[in-house]
Image (cartoon, rainbow, N blue to C red; front, side):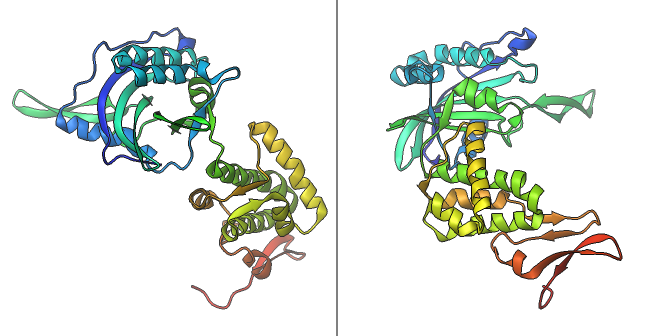
Length: 349
């Protein structure tokens, strides 16, 4: 989604956010961080690398007027006047603190950074990054005492990943300011995306492809699997992926005609689509262009294996939609009083 080859952190500050539910208090820095060369070379990729592979972006939202969105206001103020960076960074942490209305929300370190030279859709821009570190790791620190070396356990921030982060880009399109976000601790997804940032997915092919594939995965898990079994579920998912691969755009009516043979199954899909949209507060488009990047990523997440209680697992190839129906046969053995699968093949590989 972004390129960071020319990116540079020009301002960075660290605060500590508490949990309001537990009557904690925030702790603020008054001065910017001063990096030495080694720490800077670690910090820059630590903050930006997670955003280089993102395919989806967000836009600020508000029930009345997007200009009243708190994070939108804080970021806009800094973009207009960089001298307000420290003051606005404190507002950001206080706003984050106000969303901690549950004991499960973790306190942590909050890094706020002003980053220049980020490339987004072939345009160089600047961004404000907000990064929350919730989990510390234990490590051994060696030290010399009375002529001998020893170790002590200390806690610190891992350089491998951040727990939560966002980039607010100083660029807009017809839908508003572009926001990128990651969350590696999904136990409190509402807290970061909806409550703190108050953003929604951009209305583009990435979002449409993502939502439609999630609809199909949930439909297969909640409707097809209980009613028709894992074999039918795997075949439905393989047919879905095949449809997306073979078509540059998805037409809802055509999709149903291609995937379902019986009218009752089409009606079941229609009913579940309404349920999915209501449950997830999302609109599934009837026509949209397929995002190949999202399709490739989501295909890797789809599991089509059949696990049996006899410690045998049958793995179905997601790229071979007809294999399950042609070469896999399900039945019941009266003598053993057990179900079985019969697999046809020419040779072992």
